[in-house]
Length: 300
Picture 1 (cartoon, rainbow, N blue to C red):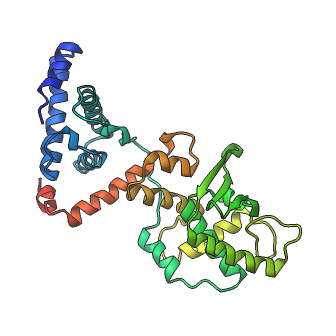
Picture 2 (picture 1 turned 60 degrees about the vertical axis):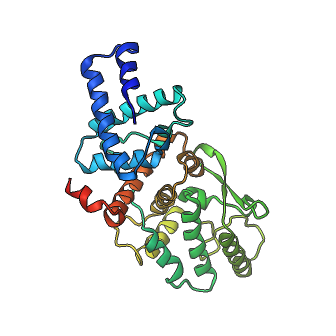
Picture 3 (picture 1 turned 60 degrees about the horizontal axis):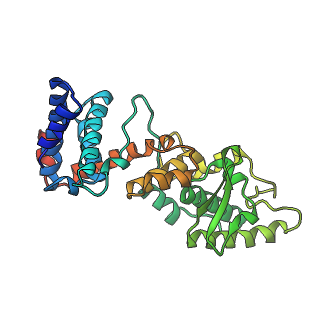
C-alpha cells in the first residue's frame, strides 16, 4: 500500500512538522507490516474494521499505553479519511472503530457455552414457577433489557404478530425489541400456567411472583443469581450480567454497534463502546488458538 501521497499531503497541505509526519509514517508502516502480512491484503480498499480491531488487540497485547494506542488510531483515522477523499476506498473502515478508554472496568459476562448449558441442561420445573424463572432468564439474555424494564412488562406490551416487545427504559423512553420464536413459545406456555394458577382478573403484569404479585427487584436478583450460580463461578451473577452478556455476544458475532446501542436503549454510542473491548479479548483468544501464524506472532 502506497502512503507517499498521504505523507506529502501532511507535509505540504497540512504543513505538519517533520517530527509529526514521521510519527504518522511510523504508525502507518507498523500497521501495514502487521495487518497486510497477516491477512495478505493488497491495498487500503481491502481493510475492514475487523482488521483494524485486530491491530488494536495486537497493540494492547504488546503492552502499549491507552494514550499510545489512541495516537496510532488517530493516525489511521486521518489516513483513511484521506483515502476516502481520494476515491481509493468506498467506505471508511474506521467508522466502526472506537478508541479505548483508560481505567474503565470491563463488563462481567457469562460465556456462551455456560448459557447454553443453563438453557439446555439445567432442569426447570414444569410448573408456574419453573416456567416463569426460565422465561425471565431467557428474556433478560435474548433482549438485553434491564431488570426494571422486565419488572414493568405488561401483557399488552407483547406484539406476537410483529414479534416485538415494548419496554420503557430510563426516563420512560419507549423502545421496541425483537423477540425470537422460541421466546414466544415460552411466553405462551407461561401465560397459560399463570392464568390457570392466579386467574386473569385485575392483573396485567406479565411476570408475577409465587404469590401472584408483581415482581420486585430483589426477587429477580435472587432468581438470576440462583440459576447463573449453577453454570458460572463468577461472584457477580446479577440480572445486569445477562444484559452485558447479550451485548457482548452480539458484538462478538459482528453486530453493528449502532444496532446494539438501539437494542440496549443507550442514549449515546459511548455507553455501548465498552462491549467492543470484551470482543477484543475474545478475538485475542481466537488468534492464539486458531491462527496458523499465532506461534510466530506470539514470539515477536
